[in-house]
Amino acid sequence: MCAQEQEKADAIARKAERKQQAEESGKRRTFWFGMGMFGLVGWAVAVPTLLGVALGAWLDRAAPGEFSWTLALLLGGVALGCINAWWWVSKESGNDD
Image (cartoon, rainbow, N blue to C red; front, side):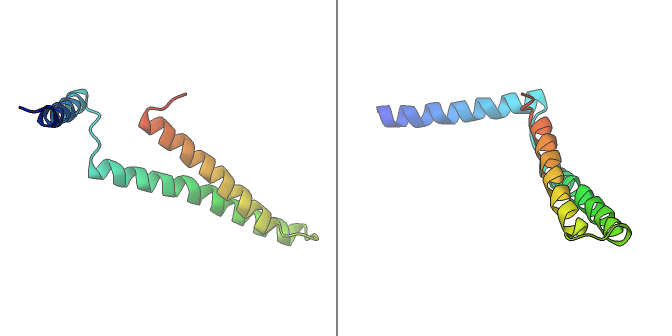
């Protein structure tokens, strides 16, 4: 067997070993896990955004000013939601730094 064939065989063996270890440890990611994570990230961003819009609309009616509370709290809600989503993804992927 030539060196190039040996390298290919070694690479296949390493991939097979990693797959077996993932299955044994229960950390194999499935399609449904991905869909669940997709939904979690969506809700993690949507909820703070909608709460910011609702609070901003109420503040615009209760205390009108020179700037839009709705727009300001919309942006704040999106930023908070993105941080929240990042935290959840980091936690689920095992990158707890």
